[in-house]
Image (cartoon, rainbow, N blue to C red):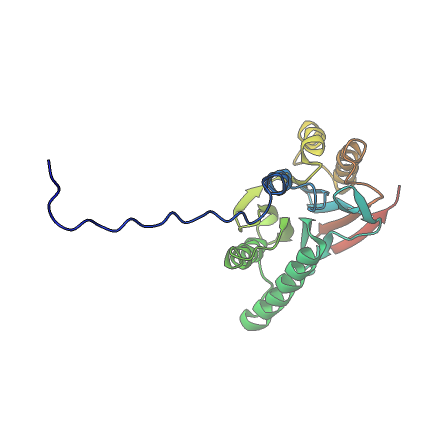
Length: 232
């Protein structure tokens, strides 16, 4: 049967341009999926006890298999009753802590009272969510003491907000959480909470090569915030 009407012109096949060798693409994909090539490790713990809240983190800063520092600080004071502990990129932690401290001070000057722990955590969640297209690579624990008592909140990179009584973030989470889960009690004293948190971080340090070199503590009670540090 004969065709009627004009024929459509045949478009030439456009050659595919290889941006990079296939092997290199596969290697980059494996690195991105693994995440351990450039993301630093940490073991950061928070827990609510009878009279307050304790936040703690080990001191090692790593990039892949390289130990960049043995004296990094991942626990920060925000107000006289609120602190934040992080695991992730150190620069992102520092920026986040400074932003939170500044906003908490502005709140207290504007409203005339200290910011609550819940409001501080929600503020931090909003900051992280607003940066979702250019995220701050850090997992965060916000803890403190206010009129409602001691409270703790866990946040991920995108600002998800989860209240809890105890939490662990970082590369040593699985090991430290097992110790914390077994020994945690809400009726613990400050001394018992510090001993439990220390034991959980030391257990993670013994198996996680990206954690170690000491522990920084932030102990929040009605008397205020006490900052302590141990080396090992």
